[in-house]
Length: 270
Image 1: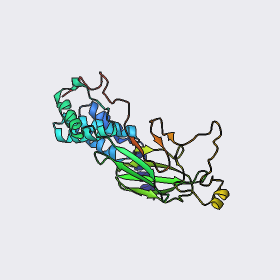
Image 2: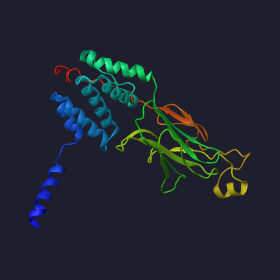
Image 3: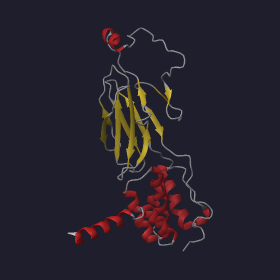
Image 4: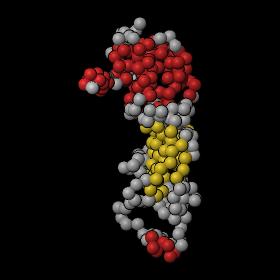
């Protein structure tokens, strides 16, 4: 029995200490081993990770494919990178081998950007849709709860949706939506579990129900205390007003540039 346990323990320890695929990919890239780098970048894209790690992996994969003399594969990777970050750039000093597939990717997208939209229907449902120029996200989730409730009710579907969760039209709700890739990384989101969006009730309840719920019945203006947030409101600093039954559409982009630093890999061209 001990003879079996020891090898198994050594294998587990070896796997536990193995470097993440993204780290291995970057090490292989810096060593100019582009075949190994491309394979490791693809492993990283299939593994759990953050959005920032996905940006690094798609950029690295695009560069590796370009250096390998695979312009079509490099363009496809650049297109995904530009969907995630339309402001991504590559240095002109990297030469036409890199610039050509990058510019082809920008031309192919023609300025298209992903848009995650959340709406509240008249029947109370909260609906999420995702328009994306390339099929980067493969899973769309929308979650809803009444303000103050302990948990959210969620529904999951495939982009572009719609994906919807039922909710009583007489009650205000809080909601958030997110889109994830095959590895579970959150690529796009509106609101969050900690900071959800809020939608007011699309239908006014009967006066008796309104009194029980402490909701102003039709024809009675509710007094708003000074300092109390009112709707419409601004989501996430994007500058889009949102109210009950009004579409919340955010063009998803990131301001930070992914340009390679001047000293990064530019003197190691094959």
